[in-house]
Image (cartoon, rainbow, N blue to C red):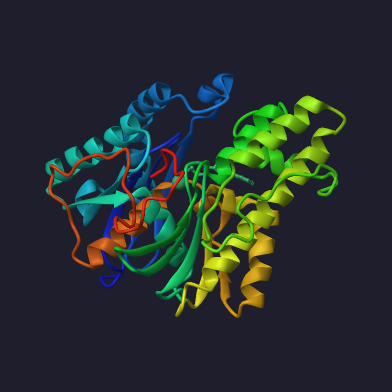
Length: 348
Ligand code: KG4
Ligand code: ZN
C-alpha cells in the first residue's frame, strides 16, 4: 500500500434491512465492501420487521467485518478509524452497528466516527466522482426519506424540502404489495412497469405548489382504489404509478433548483435512485437547467457500508470524531435548523 494513500476507514451499516461493512481510503479506494441483505427473512411479512432485522445484524455484522478485512488483507490495527451509522433508522439495528463499532474502537484504540445515515447517502456521490465539488443539490429518495438538500460541505446540509407524509420508496413498496409483486417492491414495480403510463389517471400530489415539498400518501391511496376497482392490468397500473412518481420528483426538484443558488450539480441518491425512469427524467431536468447530473452507481445508491466508510473518511479528514458515549438515534435530522413541515409524519 502506498504511504500517501490516505487514512483507511472501516464503515458499518445496520440501520434498516441491510448489514454491511466496508473499507475505504481517504483517496477514494474501496478496499473491500461486504453486504448481506435480509429479503428472505422479511419477505413473508411484506416489509421489514424491526426485531428480525436487529437479530440478523447481530449474527451477520462481525463475520462481514472479518470478511472485509480478509479481502483487503488488513488487520484491524491497520485501520485508522471506525465509522458506523448512528441513526436515523430502526433503533435495534442502529444499536447493533454502533455498539459493535464502539467495541472495535475501544479494543483497537481507534477513533470512532458516528455517521448520520442520510449523510452517508449525501456524500456517497463524492466517493464515485472525485470532481463533484460543494455545493450541490441532492435529491435523496429512499424507503424512509424523500428530501432535497443543498450539500454545502461536510456537516453542512440545508434541507430545502421533505415529504409531508410518505417517502417515495414507501409508495413503491406499497404499490408492489397491492399488485402482489412481492418485497422489496421498488425493483419489482420497475420491472412490471412495461404498460401504458397514461392508462390509469393518478394524482400528482403537490405538483405546482411553491415550496418544493413532497407528498405520496394520496398517490398510494389512488393506486389502492385503482387496484380495487379492477379493469386495469398490473403493468398499466405499475407504469402509471411510476410515471406519477417521476412527474412529482421532476416538478419538485425543478422548484428546488430555483432555490439552490450556486449549486453546480444535481445529484440523486438513495434506493429509489436505482430506478431507470427516474434517473433519466432527472438527467434531462439537469441538462435543461444547466447543471451537471451525477447519479452514483446502483450499488452505491442503495444502503451499503462503503457510503458510511466514505462519510467517515470525509469527517475524519475534517477532524470530526466522536466520544464512545455517542448515542444511537432513531431520528436524527441532517439539518436541525429546518422547519418542521406541516402535515409531516414520523419521518426524520
Ligand atoms: O436507500 P435504501 O436502500 O434504504 C433506505 O430506505 O434507507 O432504499 C430502499 C428503497 C425501497 O423502498 C425500495 O423499494 C426502493 O428503495 N428501490 C426502488 C428501486 N430499487 C430500490 N424504487 C424504485 N425503483 C427501483 N429500481
Ligand atoms: Zn438508505
